[in-house]
Image: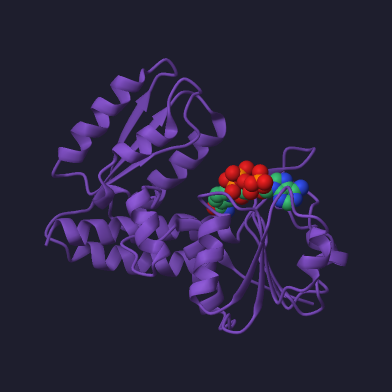
Length: 279
Ligand code: NAP
């Protein structure tokens, strides 16, 4: 039976370290949180991030904007926040309403305040192994592997999904940790056979029931990044937990796995931004 990786407990430790360090800064770190529109999932995520900030001694400045906010209005707000000395980090919750250009918005945030690590400058720095900020979800996964002393060097790693925010940076970090990485996506033939080769299998697709026991090698480490809703509206991952757990050596639950660690790394990034800004 697999050891369950307790993301909640690890995240609490990370956040406590952030709180202690934040306390020693000349002024409390500040995060501007922009939410445009009424997306219910986005509201939940933003509330969670504001709660984390409060726990870590970080001031959050909320900007809740209406659905009909124009591109120019949003860019004007970001320009103002880029200049604001009290704001160390800027987070614009995605997805944005369809009328707004997400890339343009991400690119308008000053790289030194881009605590989500979405700006091409920060993605580039991370991809050459010289990061300013860490990509929150993949770095949260790496932190879990480190905390449970799960070696990556020399291991076969298979990442399901290749999005810019999860799959691609996840593959990069595993590669930088000397894993041998295969990335699968919607056009990958026989993904199950590739997944079965994995010593470390990371699923970041967003499809309930995708990863079944027959796709998992005996003793593999299984990391479930996905946050889906099942037919009863209950939060779940891509992995069929009950059938994969007996086969894996380590497994992350959903909820209580990668999600809390993602939020904890965000807090670390805000601290990093504040330290650089307040130097
Ligand atoms: P995304 O942008 O929709 O990307 C999904 C990826 O999965 C794409 O690369 C897509 O391939 C691939 N894919 C789709 N169907 C597939 C299939 N049948 N077989 C293999 N690959 C397939 O999603 P995302 O933003 O990366 O998020 C993925 C999941 O992680 C979601 O459930 C999301 O809610 C969750 N998430 C969790 C956290 C957290 O903190 N735990 C953070 C972020 C995201 P193509 O590129 O070919 O289209």
